[in-house]
Length: 133
Image (cartoon, rainbow, N blue to C red; front, side, top):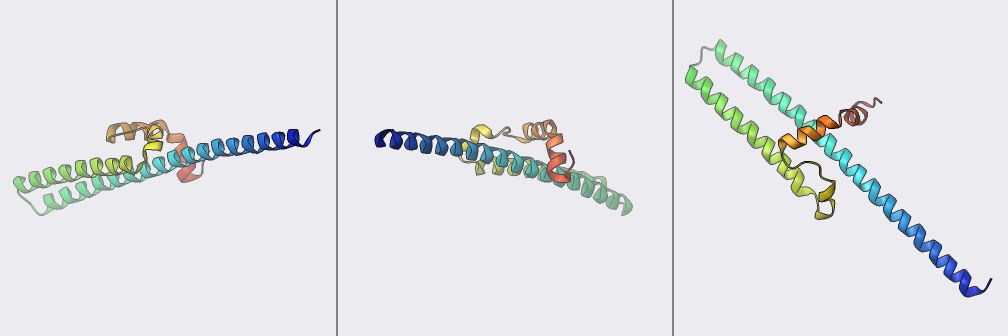
């Protein structure tokens, strides 16, 4: 074989190897991004559960101390406002952290769509957080 044909074959092989490496690395990056999204959303859902638990404890305390209905209503309004603010800001912050290159890999844009994405991937969450298959 002539030397220029060997050089051409080597160059083609090298470029092919680098191309496949790039696609494999891009696929790995997208999979890691989705896993981190699922873990983050699971943690946020757990935080919302703790918000609900703290709300019930506070309402129980207000009932035991015979607080007025006005105080209970004020607490309920403040709690709901804080909860909605937490949901909105946490999801918006997650969306804003994604660079434009990865925006297509983002499967949610607000709280309801994020919880739908989390619900659709329950089996992946079980594997990621609990190690079960």
